Image 1 (cartoon, rainbow, N blue to C red):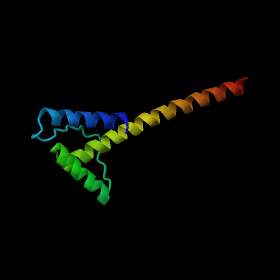
Image 2: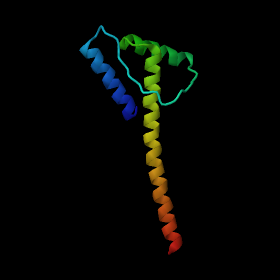
Image 3: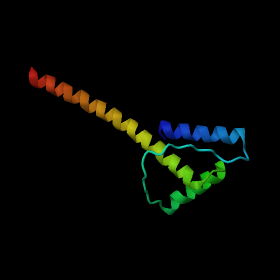
Image 4: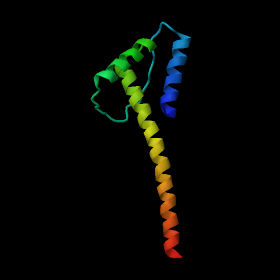
Amino acid sequence: MGLALKTLLQELEAQRAADPVGGAEIKLAVVRTLEVPLDLAACRELRVLAHVFNGEQSELAAAVLRAALQDMQEHLDDELDQLAHLARRSLDDCKS
């Protein structure tokens, strides 16, 4: 699990600890609209999460997808940095 997903889970757990009866409050800034088909297993897991954290299933799905995309972006940034470093080294080798 990546950092964004861990952070989301910690926030949800903190909300549940503060108010076990109240629903989870998730605030998301809309970046773009994304449609992802969910299989039956994913729907069941989201239903369980919604029940555990007293939140809306669709809001939890959006929050989980956003956190997963943030984690993917972080890995892409690292990989791009590595590729840029290798490209610089290759260019330096060509100049020598």
